[in-house]
Length: 265
Picture 1 (cartoon, helix red, strand yellow):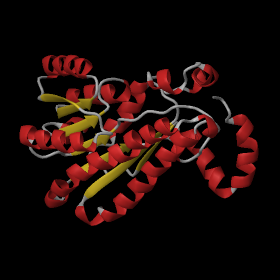
Picture 2 (cartoon, one colour):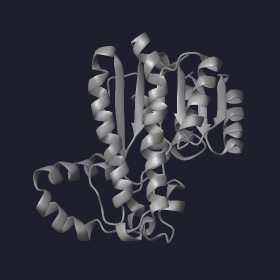
Picture 3 (tube, one colour):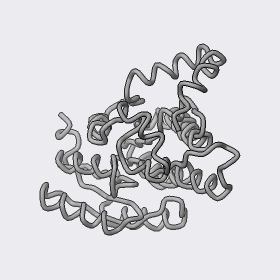
């Protein structure tokens, strides 16, 4: 079923050099999709490109892109359209976090997180929307986080960026509902990737939540299974999403208990 939907489709993935971005690329290639891989690390992209082309005989293009550089976003997407033509699915996966108390976060760190996680995502999306709307076909998949639903201590800035992604995605979904363009948000809990090399410098958070961490391959499978379907939202693990339901209903109680239970960083 997935292969039938994805064979010959053009899928663009930001942050594709590792983690769930690379895993998504592998599964899409195995399903016969053509890929455009975007990330700052060109060497890793080129290696992944060669592996996928050799193994699956699909077309793969790779471009260096820092999504925080909006001028570069415009230029790279122009090259993508010239190279492959129309884009069927855009996966906005690029992002990072730094876990610090609000008063410890530097202005430079705050700006960088918003530039990558929010502005970069919006910039990439804005480049594909005109053609998708013209064709009345396509899908935007935005990788958000459970942190976008429930803020936790020492992730105030990161949570704020993911709240922004969810707000943007929810509004975008309504804007595009008459254009047959799907907007899917993905809200995973902690994933066992190198994300925490930057986010969790001391390793305290990883140690505390290691038994709950998701495998990137599992998350990627869920995302690829949602491609070119009407899936609105993916929440992983499902039990963790129950916390956001409780939070909406009983915010004061949740915050009183949560500030102790969720302070794992």
